[in-house]
Length: 248
Image (cartoon, rainbow, N blue to C red):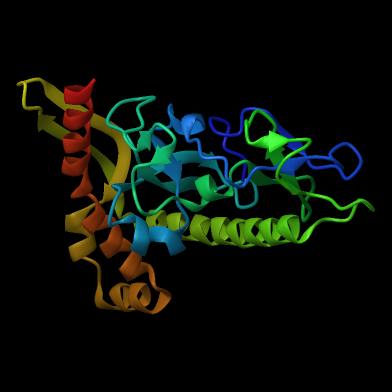
């Protein structure tokens, strides 16, 4: 998937145009994430991501295939727009890195109903014409590195589609509601984070037994629990903000 705030200049890989393009795998720099205050998560990532980030849901337009509202889960990185409290110089300040960020500077974009193209964010400073791992061999065929990356992107795209179904199910059961997070910082200033959706505890508890069983069997119950647990990480974001301000 292409994330506009992350892939600022995506271009489809072309064996002729990019024949000499190489990737410096040792290039460590997360400056491209500085302005990201959240990132899309696939459902399969919830169990790892919930240990470090708040996981919330946001409205994401309309699904082009079903024409139903699209709801996307995201990992929250900051307490205000354009703030990323995990971008620390050249390193990422958490053990788990969301899959979309791990795939960068690569992404997959649709070029037809059932066709996708591997794209690269050409603005990434880790590309080189002379150093690093080549993407194509001398005959223009994808190298093992590029084949592995394409396989990763294909799996990621499959998980993106599955995650859309999760959002649609939560909407169908009317389990989401607008939420806000209020806190008081050590200096006395008030902080409010809003614009996101979370599972409504009252509606969740009131679900009939057959719906609860359905959630268990489908695996959605585990995702809901991971989401609920993750909300405690909002206070950890405040601690990160305080430390960063103190060290500024």
